[in-house]
Image (cartoon, rainbow, N blue to C red; front, side, top):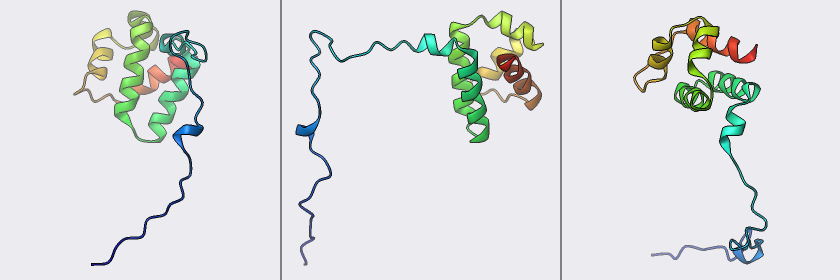
Length: 110
C-alpha cells in the first residue's frame, strides 16, 4: 500500500494570531444584537436578501428576532394584517403568503 504524501506547508499558524486578555477585557468589543435588530433599514435589507436567496427559514428567523425587540402590535396594524396572522406566519409550520410578506417588507422599508 502506497503512503500518501502530506504537504508540510501550512497557510497559517495559531502562534501568529493575536492574543486577547479576557481578564481585563481589552480588545473585546461589546456587541448587542438588539440595537441592530431595531434598525428597520438593516432588517429590511436582510429580509430582502433572504427572499432573493430563497431562504424562507432565515426570513422567518430574522423577522421573529426583529419582532422580539420591536412592537408586534404596531407592525401588524401598520402593515394591515391581523396580529394572529403575523404570529401564524412566524410559527415553524407557518407558510406566509406573498401578499403578507409584501406588506411587512413595505412597512419596514417605509
